[in-house]
Length: 473
Image 1 (cartoon, rainbow, N blue to C red):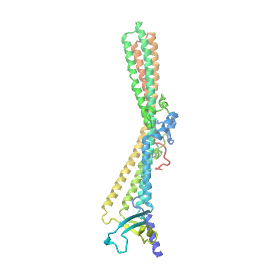
Image 2 (image 1 turned 180 degrees about the vertical axis):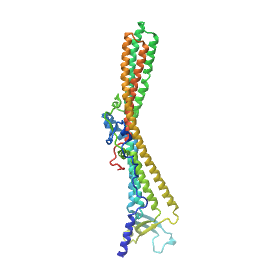
Image 3 (image 1 turned 120 degrees about the horizontal axis):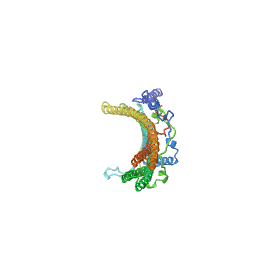
């Protein structure tokens, strides 16, 4: 008997080492996808050094650091992503449980009265029946169905982890953006208020000249109109700043009234003086959480082809049970008869397997969809990063040009003011110079905000931290 059992056991183990469906392999990247960025060859402010995971620390702003810590801890979107990760973890645990024997123990008891005509003479009409049984069943995973289900659940769990990283990246970027927007609006509001102060001074000078008979009412009206126009720019900027602070409160898990005062104390956008480390394409794809999530979903979809394919073949379970029935608890623990059963059980849908084959085709279609999503995610990640690098480089050039223009306009308005005091130019020339200077200063303040905005966009495109290893290495 032992000679017969050993070959059978060897056969079962060898079959159990197989699994239906394709074995997953990470798709190969296009030849240039993992190389240096295209913008690296131009006047880009990025460097090939690997990107900083905790990139917001480069601003060296303790208030921003605390706000981001608050957002990572209390933001509702992150709490949602955490709950989904916990659900995926629980699903993985449940699927892994299918690899273990299923044990069930059942006990039931009932009281029964027999009719007098049905009772054997000398026997009691009232009896208590006790039934108890223990059963053990184990599915022999000959064709890897359970193994593929575990692979699919693991892929879903890891994708949920990458989704959590994506939520964290988004919240950090949004929090930084709201902080930057509030500071940028404060700076532009301060510039607008400063321009109004300068125009007030010019208006007083022009009115004094009118009283002295050196200029007319038209010049006064023109300066006054420009002053009111610039004064009208202030309320929208104040509202924009307040809206950014309200957004910042929500992102950090607070009501608008509970936002600490220091969150809105900054009056200029935070800046980064050093070149931003951007890495290369391979580092980007390993760092972007959306790429990792897409790759893990592709792995899960591939595993489900094996789950569907395994349904074409028989399922074999090994089971054993032991049970007993007795009249009353006393007899049960005494002389109750014992029944036992042991043996294999086979289930197989055959020959009609159209449903199973349709499930395989659906799983294959899902895998092709997941592969297309993965390829598209890579292309979008590369395009977003290249675009962000390009935009950041150009906005730095624009800020430098506007700074030079503002300096030239300031020198020009100072010259015209001096000439007006000397009586060599009229008020119209001063008005033009004042308007040019105010426009240049407002444009420079707006460009400062654009630089900060594009910095955040670049960091968002380059991905965040939190992952331990790259899935594309």
